[in-house]
Image (cartoon, rainbow, N blue to C red; front, side):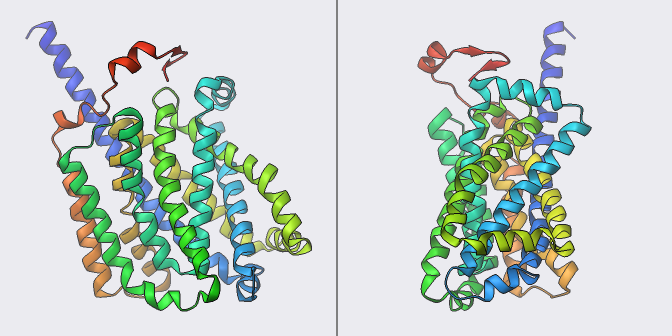
Length: 363
């Protein structure tokens, strides 16, 4: 065997390993994302969020703000611990100083912040079923944005897989939407706005972060993304929320941080959502934004399994059918030929000619 043949064989093996790990990371994200719904739902059953949810007026909205802020802080703490354990704390500081790279994580943090808050608002005002349906549509936005911004290839087979997964999600959750809308009252439109934010936010976040993940470590990138989100919450949103709600905001925040049950749930939120995001970000450079987001959308049927384990409530027939459809969609993506997955992004000549080099690659 010639040297050229050996190099080509090693290159093919390496690429196959990359693709395999890309799907493994995306599936890990789906498992942990589904697990997040257990503490994410339970936190509304304890004080002070149970009382806020029962109030008229802006109780739901105030509870959603406080929950989302504390969720972001919990995830950031988990990420700092994770980076420290991996011995990458210096890399975090180094990447932060590389403005041409770290600047992409600020808009990614903003998009993700809007998505998480939108999803929480949708749950509060319309219901968990609607929020889940809305979130399952985000791969379409992400794939479209990735193709428009940096020409990421989406084949007909990949597009079919995305559509099938989304269809499975709709079958799973749609039957419960009408029953939950009745509890939204006159402010139900806020839930629909929140659902739209979840779709657009998570779709755009993957496409934006994918630009920087080509030249930076996913663990560091994710920590920078949540650093940006927490800063936006603390510098921009908290003063506004405190000004609008006054004492009620600080009372809710204080009551939450002094309740041991809430603190335990926050630890679970940070661990599940934090490492869900770690897996999500690691999948993007390996299999692309569109495929990574589509596989991660399997969190829908997986969430049903987690909820059954903790509540012992058997899901309905539509949930089982929808889960099967979503799994079929994932296998459509899994079985795509490796030579098709070889080239994910086609960089236009004009872009290559005008691209400026930065430490670690081009961006």
